[in-house]
Amino acid sequence: MTYFKDLNLPSNLLNNLDSLGYTKMTPIQKISLPHILNQKDIIAKAKTGSGKTLAFSLPLVQHIKAKQQHPQALIITPTRELAEQIATEIKRIARYKPDVKVVTLYGGTSLTRQVESLQKGADIIVGTPGRLLDHFSRESFELEEIKTLILDEADRMLDMGFAEDILKLVSNLPKKRQTLLFSATYPDDISKLSEKVLTDAIRVELEEQEQTLKIQEHAFYVDNKEKALITTLQSFQPNLAIIFCNTKVKTTEVSDMLNDKGFDVATLNGDLEQYQRQEMMLQFANGSLPILVATDLASRGLDIESVELIINYDFPHKEEEYTHRIGRTGRADKEGIAVSLCNEYEKRKIDEIHPTLKLKDIKELKVNKNFYMQGEVNTLCIDGGKKKKLRAGDILGTLCKDIGLNVKDIGKINVLNTHSYVAINKNVIEKAFNGLKNGKIKKRKFRVWWL
Ligand code: ADP
Ligand code: MG
Image 1 (cartoon, protein in one colour):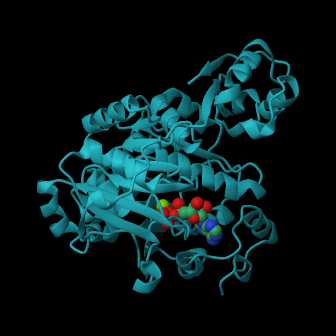
Image 2 (tube, helix red, strand yellow; image 1 turned 180 degrees about the horizontal axis):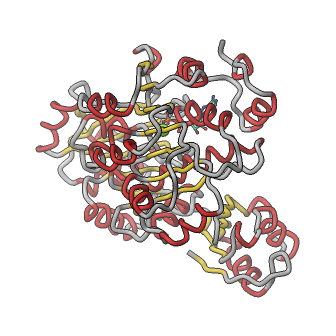
Image 3 (cartoon, protein in one colour; image 1 turned 30 degrees about the vertical axis):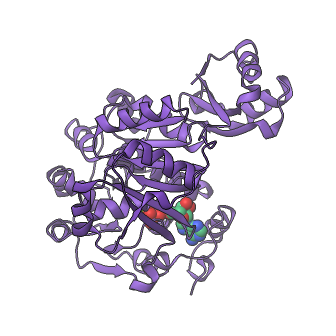
């Protein structure tokens, strides 16, 4: 049994999976799906990028009934970005089922607006612990009908001190429910939480040989990290790269330094406003800003296509975080490269956390001094989205038919609730900007910004 069609699933679900490019199950899906479809509680451990999201989303979507009074599923994640990503994936999988409502609840966005969308009916709620608890105390949703609870990256939530919040939410859920825990790492203290939230759980874990990732790991001993960072980028010449720092301040310093040197950089840390976080991630994923400098906020769960290089500018404090950081590349059987830049003090940390990693001399790397990571595209923001019934096709139509752009100059289009974003080749972006500013989309005027 390796194909989704070998599972006993309705044909419209299978057709939709097929259209999304999901035909063969990944190993973790193959061993966990039968149990999950069978309504068992599971605690699943599988390497980064192995398809855990689909493993928990597919049975969820299959069991969900649209247009019920109360939410039926609750998914808790450590970060806002991960909540958003999971909600998007669930909506894709649920395309074949009309009217399934997925609502995201996390901090940094208006509580009132979240309450409004809850009032319109939510079947599946995806959120971060603090904001979920906030809504629960305000009674903006009922938990009585929850049939499925999913904790993605549960160990990270414990690390962040969310255990109490999670337990408070869980104690208000029906006892009769299915609970699923997913992560690539489980430190010992997870068992306390799992005992409290799971019932007769089945542990699902892959064999060691199925766990190997196609990530080439390097560590270099360096005395000047800024110089070494440029060397690394100019040597590996990736499409997209993520650079991890241990502090928020450091992410800003490193971003400024790279900007000065002519690299196009996005920064992600917890000091940013929510809209800035969203726009940074978006511009990274659409190629406008091909480098993301981030704290561990970006280390868990994020799935961004064609991230080829991960750099630990600072070496992480824990083995788990090393695993998750480098796991942002080499996803879904692709290859990736991870580089750690280490000073004298960090050498000791490597011995402790990852002793098999051998330190090399950075002088071994050949560099192309003319290589700079600059986005071929820039992003325009339009002040209308799903709420104004705008679709990607409408924006594409206006850009091509009315403004006269070539399709190949138009990159990713993201239509969010209240705004839309479109990536456009730098050579023609001025034309696109003026055209959108002075023209109309679907016969309506919209405001446009150049990010
Ligand atoms: P994990 O949570 O295990 O780190 P994700 O669920 O984010 O990994 O999945 C990683 C990538 O693999 C995603 O881009 C996803 O679309 C892809 N993927 C998942 N399952 C399949 C499958 N059965 N076939 C092909 N691609 C898949
Ligand atoms: Mg995941």
